[in-house]
Image 1 (cartoon, rainbow, N blue to C red):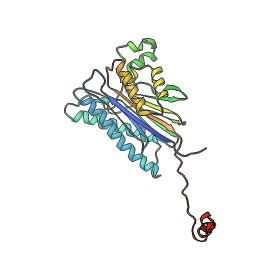
Image 2: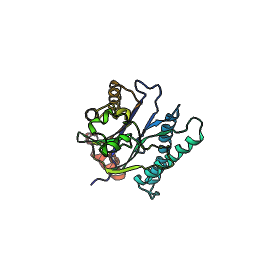
Image 3: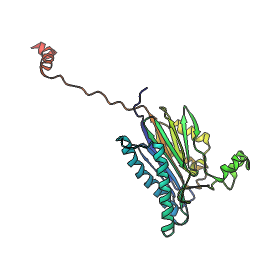
Image 4: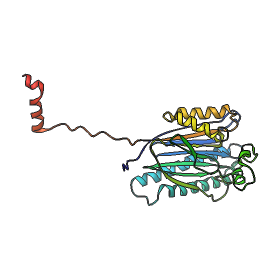
Length: 282
């Protein structure tokens, strides 16, 4: 089996939607380090956007540092291990800022991130931002929401078909920054060429049916910026009552560098020159 790392295509987009004046979501992708991340902030005044921006900026900085050391062979952690560590550190940083900065009390944020490394991906999430995977035309939800509604459905307190109309649909049971510690949901899986990973906030997943997510991502998987734009537009068309954020990653064949052409030297070069058609004409 070829163990060359897969080539990765990435795109992300965030909009405030049609109702909210501010965008408290944040997203980023980094093709050099194989990272995609989304965050959905919450809190009064502008603290929600502060929390989500802190989560993305801090986690990206720490992830890049870890990945450099991993590539240099001087890190004794796996991506899933340092993802867990970094999300925990991010939680502590936001929790401390919430207690010290004026106007930031009670701020928090969801977080969903993917670290693509070699032929695997490490996934981590807290809150109700989601990670999906499209494989062979079929979209699968890989994460479980940290939400009161999800708990109620699992315990049989509300029927799954009634969940979409529940008043508890946006009540998260944990988020970064709210408590001093947090439970990070982690998983790792093998990648296949053609896979597309979709990370999104609930402004997309609440307003667009999974069948429509699947249709758009599958149809536009070779043009991720267009896919992201269409997803956001559909959420807006369906009401756009929340901020809408999406990050996409497509797994492509490894890029094979062509072998360098070595020009003949010395006696071989003279022989080839003598045998060339121009030499024969003389």
